Image (cartoon, rainbow, N blue to C red; front, side, top):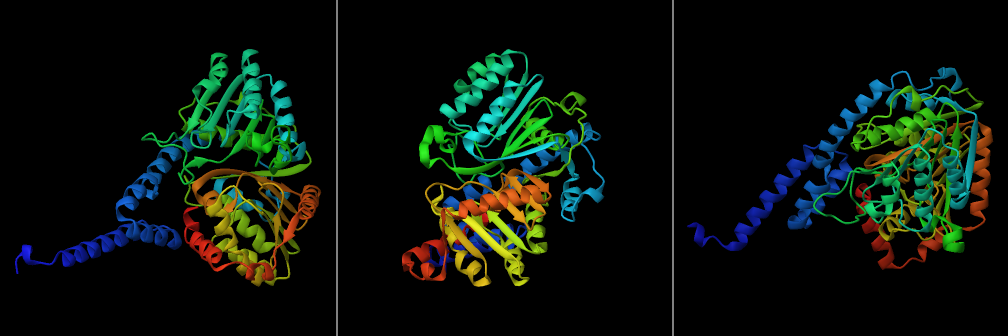
Length: 473
């Protein structure tokens, strides 16, 4: 039989088989997590013409090139800052502090002041006041910096600081802050401020939810002695003054003292990677008097093969003795995180999880709800916050640990984004966050098995389907 006599269906089947086998071998050799590899395999098999370009555009091979370039920049910063960070004896730290110390050499430090904010406007007021007091430099890094009335306030404050001779460095994520174009920052740059965009998309791509290697961090450092981080972006949706009663509920933290050096370093790494200068001299890391608060800054990102924030979450939940209070807008745990929550309940720990009733991403919301039944069966207590979007990312362990940061409880924050988190050790702030958790629960509905049984078949199918994509969310 000649080639012309072979049925076209047989040729198609042979080609399809070769395609599938080749893809499987190719992706398996990448040695990524099994769930993620399977998700890519199914996506490429089912969408052969669309899937392959997406894989090379957003997949691990493109990410690996960026990782190598980022590591080069990070090594340079590490050498420059070898003696700049405060190092506290490990006796001051709890058992969990060793995670950051071993995985990224971030030691527990101290703060003279730790102040928590539970609304965007309160955080904005504190940040703007700190910038107005700046005398030497202001460093700012944000995932979302909108060109609206709220974003304009920060831009104008930075412009005023630059005008009076303060060094201003602003780093915004190129995807998250796509709406804030060059013209929006024109007055700031004209006044001497430096503006960089983190990892600009190529090929003219517009805003996309699933682009990798983003900086999801929210950082402000003033004069090396005052720092801010948490969940609040600069956007009208976070401000009751701009959006009224629908403003998002969020949590942010202000730090003063030696621990700010770790927050400063976190900013510097991404700034240097973004082709900025290298602000690594002692001037940016002043000697500060230690305080009574024990605080550790954890940073995590896709440039690493280990993920300190994920490891901390797992270990903190797995070793809790009395309570775990988790607040997150996105609840898409991987298997280790899910196992930690379940095992905590089996040890008699009270595990409560607070999520928004209506999130800002339909697919992530559906994926989150696909975990409800499993968590309820394990004995976890689930609450859905109502009335407005809940965007806070906090964790309370017993009366020992309180975390406030930028990381959601999902794979994207654990492994694909650059994140930062402040860990405060001690009962005072753990109990303060627990009290806020209780206030939030008053505005939430308890999720029960009966409620889940009332879901329609189509909604269950949609949630189960969204869960299949959870390694990529």
